[in-house]
Every structure is written in structure tokens, then in C-alpha cells.
Length: 275
View 1 (cartoon, rainbow, N blue to C red):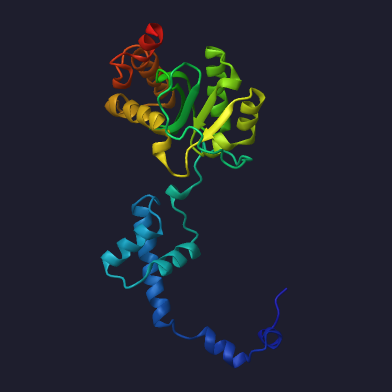
View 2 (spheres, rainbow, N blue to C red; view 1 turned 30 degrees about the horizontal axis):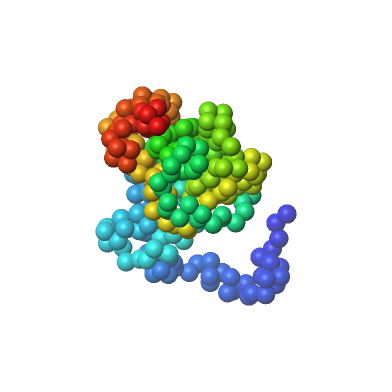
């Protein structure tokens, strides 16, 4: 229901004359500048298919000649309801997981191991694919540097680690009480279900110092070789192709063929067979 202006002014505590003066006023210089800047941001974002965020659009506005700061551009874009396509929530992220405190670094960079199934080391890396990131988890036996299990997933979570652990356990059938499992402090390794898996098998858990890649140098070295020797030589690929290429590298080259200086120039499989 429409109400008289006089009554509305009475409710709001303003005079009718003041209201009409405000209604007929000329836009301030600030408002005029904002109107011009808003028009430019709309045209520029449309031209760039709504991909850039407010920082990139601010740089474009400054380059065009506008005198403004980032916060002003951000505020105007928000008032327009603008949202960068690049800022949309990514798919394939790990769900929040219940985690415990990291374990102590019991391995302490003692990478030379004198028997199999005494120390396993693990890590996760990511590879960009057509559909987004794909994650590769590997477990190495430090005795021979052999990749005893690996798995890929579009989600980096404890489930990926557990899948790899189950493969390694089925393949090697170790004595859990004599086995140490070493990794970094990633939430996938500190997840409650992962630590329960170790506890059930009486495995000793060791974790690198926070942010210290040298404490897990063997796993880091494997991924460096994997990307340098194999992945970097391939073009853009799908997640399915990434899994296939990982299998080719690990099962047909790295384990049976690739020679290691730490193994006296032998491949991991040959080293286990000869010892």
C-alpha cells in the first residue's frame, strides 16, 4: 500500500523539504567517478570473460587512467555482484578430516636400510590434467627404493593413502611390529582412520619435521624423477591417461629398469633378487 511522502518523512524523522532536496541533488564528484569506474569494470570483465579477479581488474583500471586503489575496485565489483570464474570452488578437494598430532621423526634421515619391510616411506604429489588435479600416492621400501604400491585419485584424502597402504600390505605381507612407516605431516597421514590402520597392525609411525622436505628425501626424489623423466615429456592428458602413464613409469621402467647409484647401479627389482 502506498503511503504519503509526508507520513513516511515523519516516520523516518526527516523533513519533506530535505527529502525533495536530496532527491533532486546532483551526483557528487565521487559518485560520478564511481559510475565511470563501474562502467569500465563491467566492460573490461565482459571482455575478459569474467575470468580476472579484482586485483587484475584494478591493474587494468590503473593502466587505463583511473586513480583508485584495490579496495575501491573490490567494493564496486561486490556491489555489482561480480564474481571471478577463477575463484569458484574447485572440485576434487579433500573433505575435512579428523586428525591427530604428528608423530615424532623417528627415522631421522637414516635412509640406509639393511633389510626389506623394515622402513616404508610415502608421499603424495599432484599432476595437472585436463579435468583438474590428479593425485599420486606412492610407498617405497627404503631397502631397495622399490615402489611397492601406488594409487591415483582426483581427491587428495586419507582414502588415497589407505588404498595405497592396503595394496602394499597385500603385496609384501610384512611383520607390522618390525615395520616403520615414514611420511610427512600431511592431514592424509595424520587422519584418524590412517593412524588406526597402523595401530591395528602394530606399525611404528614416523613423520618428517614440519615443512622439512629433506626428512622425506627418498620420496621427494622419486617424484622429482617421475616428473622430470616422464610427465614433463608428455602433453596435456586426462586423469585416466595420467594413471596409465604412472603405471608405465613405475611398473615397466622405474622398478625393473632404472638404475640407482645407492643400489650399486642396479634397479630396485634386481637389487631385491640379488640380495
